[in-house]
Length: 309
Image (cartoon, rainbow, N blue to C red; front, side, top):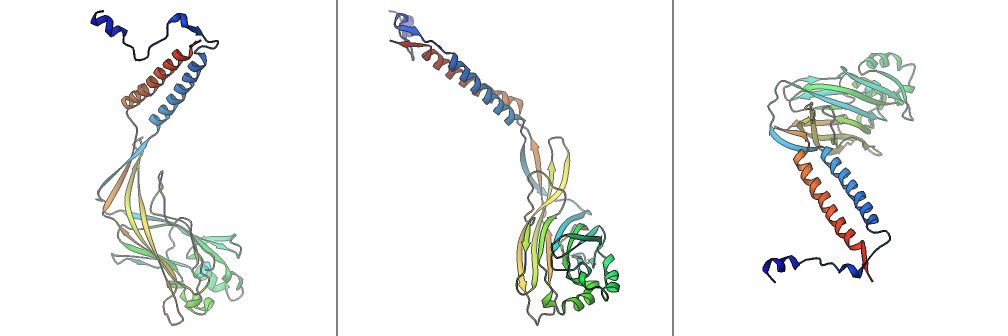
């Protein structure tokens, strides 16, 4: 026997001789159908994997100058009447605004938390001063504040309290700072539009005071962010991290309870880009998966098509 014939006689999967084999009734039909189903399933899985985008994160120095920072707020104060509520803001440039009312709305809530009225933030001060003598019921209402603050793009803070223009009304209502209940529910606090996958850590925060009042302080670190869709649309926004601190009051404190949001901006901006896998990558994975499945199905079909007796 020559070398060529010897090599041809080698077989990793030797078959039995034909006269020792008998065809099965179903043959390899069942195996073929199962193989086709598996290949179709794997094809759809690979197609969905190819069509699904993924995100790539990049960091760079923030070069933005002269822009404003939008702050979206939606906060409920169940024990703070709207007529004494004030939104104030101050930043490192020295700008100090008291009782902000531009693009800020508040909803008057009854004891059960249902809305019974809505007005601009500053509209109620004079109105309530004129009306409170002959209607004291509204002083027990809660308040929901929502809107957008446009502040300078520098470190600063905004706080919600009974400060500023409404302090005289607050003293008449609460009979001292220790009785001011700044319990609050943060429905939404963000620094720009939302993008897929964004999580604002303060959304859904509930802080209800059962005992002595005090001051809440949220220390926020803002990270400028750009989200780039696969369609080339760009959303400039911000994400942030936060730490919380509560300082209880005593009867000798001269400050008024408040909820402070103290923010600072990171010098680094994050760019999040949507990308899609290359078509060559898709074809390579598809050939590997379908080819392997086809070969395995063929091997099983060959072994089940016959049986030895």
